[in-house]
Amino acid sequence: MEEPYSKDGFRKYPTLRDHPLKTAAQWLAGRTADDGYGHLWRVGDKLYNLSDFIKIHPGGRQWLEVTRGMDITEAFEYSHLNPHVRTVLAKYYVQPAVGSRNSPYTFEADGFYMTLKERVHQHLSTKVSREEKEAAHKRITTVQDRLLFTFFTLLVATAWTQSYMVAMLAGIVLMLIINCSHNFYHKKDNWRMFCWDLGLLSSYEWRITHALSHHGYTNTLWDFELSDFEPYVDFRVHSKSLTQRYVIPLVIFTVSYLFFFVEAFKRIVTIAIGQQRLRPENLLPLVQLFLIWWLGCPFVQAVKLWLVVHGTSSYLFAIVGIIAAHHHPDMYHAGDGAFQYGNDWGLGQLDAVRDRKDVDGILLAELTMYGNHVLHHLFPTLDHGVLDIIRPVFQQTCLDFKLPAELAQLPSRYTQWDLSLGVFQQLARTQPRLSVHSKSD
Image (cartoon, rainbow, N blue to C red; front, side, top):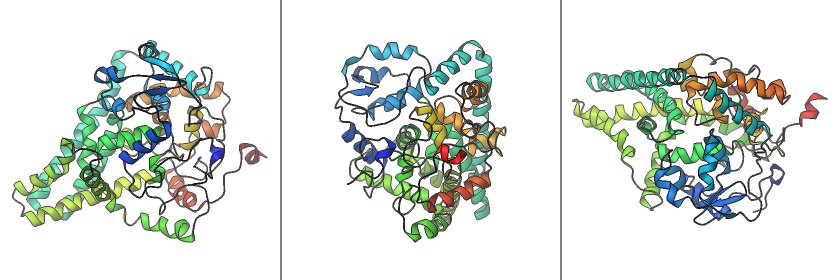
């Protein structure tokens, strides 16, 4: 098809982006087709053979297994703070890459992101003690452990009381657990990331569609989360029907309880057609159903209560995700043309992410409502508890690069109401943003 967004700098319209079955497997197939590096991996302008490194990769096998044949420059850069990883990577060098990268993002040594990353590494290595890091991590795990205990207590109470109200409370807590576990599936393999799978979701799939796609290419054509519900829910900036602009936005806020079930259905389909395999963690929601039934609740009633738990969790998860941090006319979306502040990857993230001042400083809210989101996008593999520790480094780097206060979020001027209203405004938007200079004129 004709590429209508070439001004964004991407060299190709993503293969399979408009396929009716939107899945992690389809996104990977499209990326490997477009990049086409066979059994190799591209980082910057070099190709590497990481086949022998897969089994000893500190982050776990999955990250490298699913990205074979792809350009992983973005993922490599935002996943690794320690410059020592470049020494390790060099051992697997094969040859120079031919041609330019499909992605327009840059990682210049003296650019904003690489400067920030070096400063953050130095700060955490020399000015933050091991005890401080462990304490920050402990605060996060304590929150998740308490949520887990509360959820299973409510699940037992649901079975004993057969109360739909208690089932709804369990669903609310389940949503909080899932969003909290988002902190952990970005990191190296750990058991806590499987809390994501408690809610008919898949940590395996979301490592692809969220960690690799959304975080690497936020709000661009390569962002799976931008395309997942197209052409119905369309955040891109282009011509849209009146239904897409004004009717669908109202509908999505009424049918979001179906989201988990749609995700589960797509997983069943991809397993059935051989695009992925059934994983043990996929069965965790069925364990919950069995538990309710085993505790004495009649099976049909157990199914109804189980549906209420997951329907409630699904609704809240979808609403929180939509209005959290990414959809407002002030933010970059595919179709806006060139990035406002250049092609540096870090500046691209600042252009597509906002923080909310009404959740700042409230740990439970930050963990479960996607707070502190700007720093999370810049350093997604850092434990969320560490983000406040590096905030002064981020702020100073923004000042050194003379970034506008609005871009640097110093301080954030967005409330939850601003971003909620912004979702409707963005879905209705058909014209690119004004340029920075036009705004200031």
